[in-house]
Image (cartoon, rainbow, N blue to C red; front, side):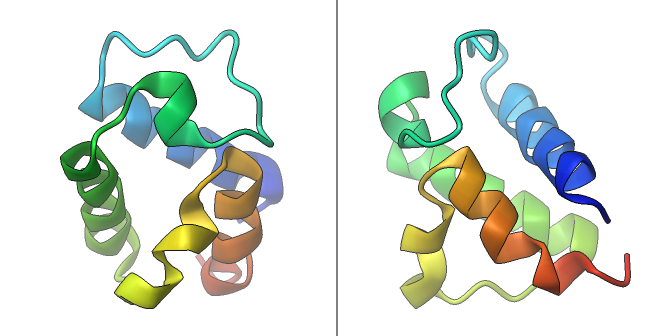
Length: 83
């Protein structure tokens, strides 16, 4: 997957979890939880959806790597190269 495809997938998952999220003003380098008012359960839902769709195992210790849209793409890119 390309970086843009990964970005689109992450945005799609967020929109599925929080239909009211304002993705138009999303800043890729700012924490998603702060910008979109995501709670810890929403965040876990994002992780679980990534696991389900792409058979990824994301250890809890790596959760901070998924804080921003940019960091999500950076974290997922090497793991989704063959998808």
